[in-house]
Length: 239
Image 1 (cartoon, rainbow, N blue to C red):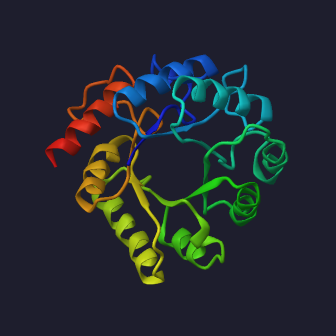
Image 2 (cartoon, rainbow, N blue to C red):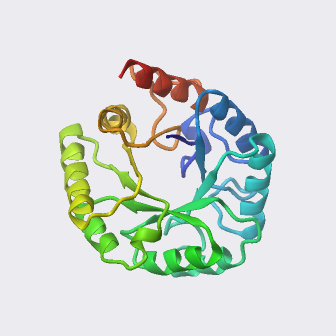
């Protein structure tokens, strides 16, 4: 599976094509799917362009995207830093009326089990985001681990050898726990393409998009998400 991460927490100045408004996300989603994306991951924004978990902002983004690409699964982030931040962000999450197909939850965040329980109650899929072996150990110990949609192995390290080492340690914990869940492996910025190649090699799900980086495999600046995804599709065809 190839997932497109359209915007993340990147500011408008990061790239001319970064999508923030519902209309921009809808247009970018259509282009991403046409380029080969099978799922979408987005960070809804408020009128000020900042990340938002408010029900209206989340609903507007999801409805616009679904009208543009009906039937394509759409997930959003529950990142600790999204306003109002920390445990306080659980309040707007509880008020969602338009629901995403799944959310990403980072196990490094202290209330991750609480957010997971809330998603399970609401029938929303969970991508369990693991940044380290410590995150993985915390995750596999949770009774709800097996109820997740997938495991999201996220490599933040910018040195590829260090990143591969972290990925190996995380995957070892998952394997030792005997968890049989799909795995999505991705990097960011300097490791985006090397980790994409590793995911291809190992047969894992993949993620590409402006949230993770703006450069093409040759180092040139991509025109936008569609060009990044076409490059990922091309690499998969050559693997």
